[in-house]
Image 1 (cartoon, rainbow over the protein chains, first blue to last red):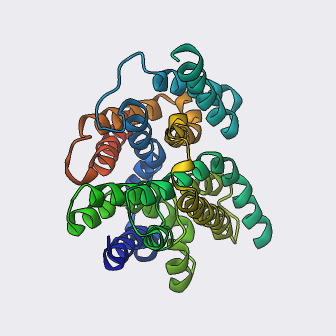
Image 2: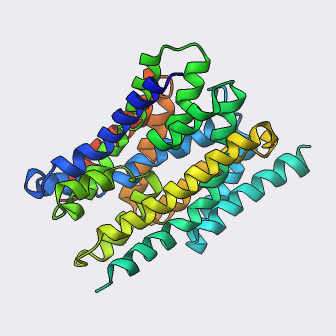
Image 3: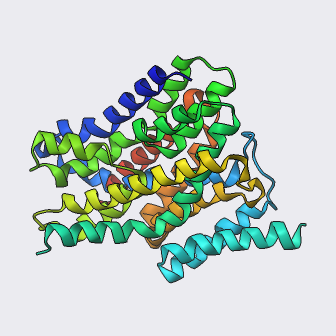
Length: 105
Length: 228
């Protein structure tokens, strides 16, 4: 790893962040596109959630009885009912730890 | 009407709960870099220059696995291309800012900051200084990320791997989208994205992270057509 490669990666990352913010103006996006863009959070974040839950560190699918699936389901349930971010994260982590340290240990 | 300071504080407050997952992840990110044998100063430089959690880990892992710099840099670019979508959404609210302000704010846009500020923007469209909310979320994230990755670099292998703290990242994003499960159209879009991301997980350069959202947005466009 060289400083030059980090700078290239950083500049590229900055351009992905900056391009749309700096170069797009309201008139360039029609109403139809704006309506579709309303779905961006729902269309992007599951691509972080699903692999984070269902794929392990070695790039393989986990088993259906994996504690991560249970932890994620608990997090969804608690998050939906509590509307609280901290409760959601803690519920998922604690239920996951309970399974790996207490049940499966 | 909120003042600039109120909006900045509100942004800090809105993103603060996510630090529960961001800080452990940052510590892991720093620790992995040192464990893989990289120069600690370069590992830290990534947090300052790239400033993107997942892309920093992928960058380290690819290089330590023998990938060329070109492959590693390309992968970082593709992983972060999702920011093009965030930018398109945010551009509507940041339109009136001067170019220089837009260029500066761009550096601190992160996933959770985009998500929380976008939620706030939708409810408070008429506010004059909306961008201070985004600056609040971005600055909070920036400071926590620098401290967390630095701690990880210093602590190194003391971070217990068995805790599986990486799992906190999907959980933080579950917290962001979970309320939209009330809406059927959003549920369809989410499931499309999630399944596509698994289907295309082995696509080159980690491109599943932009392929899946594009498929999901295409489905969203179809749903909008059906609704009419």
